[in-house]
Image 1 (cartoon, rainbow, N blue to C red):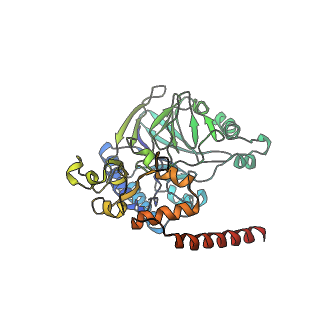
Image 2 (image 1 turned 90 degrees about the vertical axis):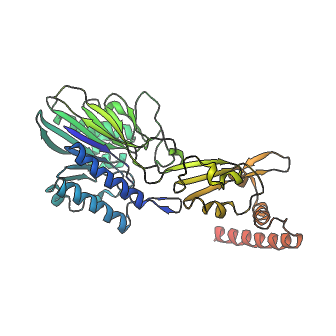
Image 3 (image 1 turned 60 degrees about the vertical axis):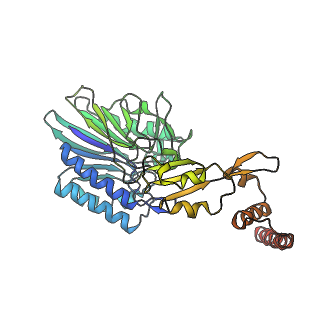
Length: 386
């Protein structure tokens, strides 16, 4: 059986001020072509279909168009679970009806996990659908478990369900969460709720032939049978060096090892940093790849540049932001982010005035500014005490 494992589409997400809907539509069109080209037997979406529990109408319309083409035109079954960004109840809307056309969705955790069986020439393949869950969900489903940690919650739910696992056939787990093996995992700024408290050992899925995971945005293996496909697009600057892909999985006869291949996703626009002197960055000949339509963040090395963002936008219309060097009175150079954390409100305003006008803030303006800030502080204290 041949299947494509994907996750973390985050439909409707913005990158800084820019909507990524066109980039996501480009990915989904490419994915449909890949599904047809590879003649796949199933598509897996391991959570975070949308970026927020109540997605925008255009994000829902994009997913609706994809589902219709995948199931009705290509006839490819889709197996999906809700991620921590999704609303499980909303994803499950019309679930019974959609199953009739091959779209199987598990939005909310169940005491008896949703299982879907597909068949190929080697026999049945059972897919186990496990959406993102909290320990409180498991305490509700299994009151006697007393699960207080994520590890205890998964252990209890799997202990309840694994007696139903038939090892004579192939079994695939689909889950969304933070799972770790012996190897260090690769994390990104985009992921929420990752850390020690919600970590679960990937060994929990050892009984399965393959575990298709979602939540971490970098493609990586965790444990012997579990794998993250990663997100199809770069959703933060921390992911600029990640090689985005979908995972093509081929399951042979029962007992055989799954064949796994990463297929790179062609991005409509890349996400990257550019660095150097401002005049060089403004020179089109300075940039070797000439990809001026990419999402770029500029790290400017020289001081005294005014309106850098606006000027760079004429060459890079999708510029995300700039980093400028500043010097403290002792001459130490620091970056703008660090500087802002160490400055008072008065210093922030004085620096803004200097950057905007090229001049120092006049003394008479300093006195007015001090009165305004003092008045605001008094109002804040009154509100806090009331």
